[in-house]
Length: 366
Image (cartoon, rainbow, N blue to C red):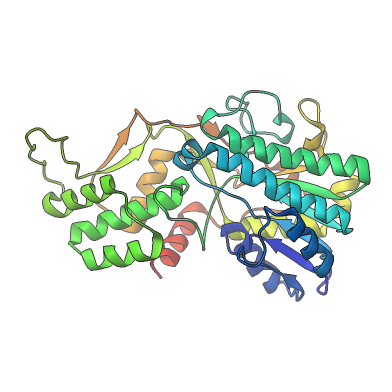
């Protein structure tokens, strides 16, 4: 890419897309193309075709997707596979038809088998069964990876994929019914802190900005406000009131996290080295040949969800209790990415997790 290249960022208002815009602008790229959902529905092939024919982007960062955490994936499996298949199919085909020089497809680390070896290598793609709670979403993302590789083989395009680990940063989703684990922890502990202070005005402002507070969690906030860390007296013929932050699972699964700005830097580096990506594809000894043009992007370190929760609580300033509900799913036991393909190209993440969580919480509060 050169500073005058026409670059389309699909999904520019989301966590990843907004980070890409920030980093591209900071690097001096001037011809950035964006469309809000109200202006362009990526699920409509005719609209996507007309947009590409009119704007003629040279490079595409495909960050648009329907995303969510365990609860959202488990509740809306048809939406996650249907919408994502439409978006990626429409954009990738339009990119081919209109001669796009390079396309980067954003996947997800959930594409890898649930019990694959650690750390996860790109070649593990399609070597085992997926985690059931987000299987439809994972299948959609795998389809996007395979679609890129199929176009490369049949038409000589230069479409490749990246697999980011769990992401966080500005413009994250803090809806308690659909968010991923880290933003959900930030919001839950923040609301718990406000409840302990009895600051219901601040809680109302939070709800107006970040979405409705589920009834069961609102009940928890009421108990925190009334009883703090003291034992809650039982109520006859009623479920026991809860004055601690309840989290899904056991807290034992290990997860890796990366700030969205670090991801954006990696994506831009790869697009600028697209000749290297296609002249020296990664080696694949098992799994799918599409893994040759696949790049893991992560921090190289993981921690348990319980340790993460303790870190977030400390950063937020919540000093109440946390309880784990083992009746809810844990998800994949561990998802640590092997990022050697990228580090061999000279890329390393810049923001540590503790610093990143503080930065994310400051953005949340502002």
